Image 1: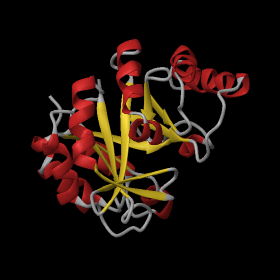
Image 2: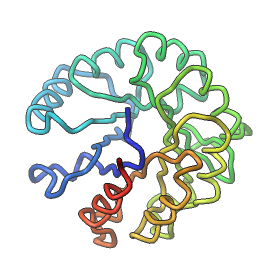
Image 3: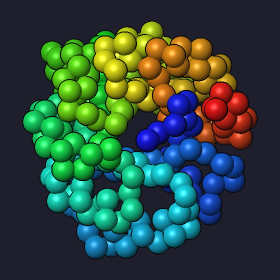
Image 4: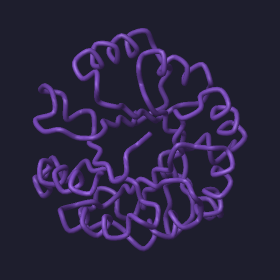
Length: 223
């Protein structure tokens, strides 16, 4: 399980070696639907040998149970299902039954409405309504991304993230717009509402968020 209030960083940050500071999780989102190849699985196995104690989340192009099984067999801890979850919710139910405690749903939204297919399409479905559906399936958590904030370095949408967390009992991981320690502290202040972690990416590369400071702050609230 993801520990209460966790800090997660993008896997490409490992390109030049191991994380320079301790973090709770590494996440990797494939930017296009890709078939799980022997090369990808081999690469993951090599990576996991270097960081055996660090959980890994992976998402992007997950469309079948075979794909999930291949990643889990390679040592991945959590699989993030996005577009497939929105278009075929029953697939999430099946995945949770087959691979309990390994499935995360990624809900990307604009003005509260779910976006799919790399944000190319915005549906008329409320993200909070889908969250209620997936609560019944037993997903481990929901990664909630406000796409209007993602990568814009304008701060996280705390209000929308709290609304998502209150919609169900499923823990929510905040994503999109996390820029500096103010965002980390703002999320921590409302973490009792059901927010269990934060994903940050661009802020690391831009140097606006000190990962060591953010992780130490997050750690200070863990029992």
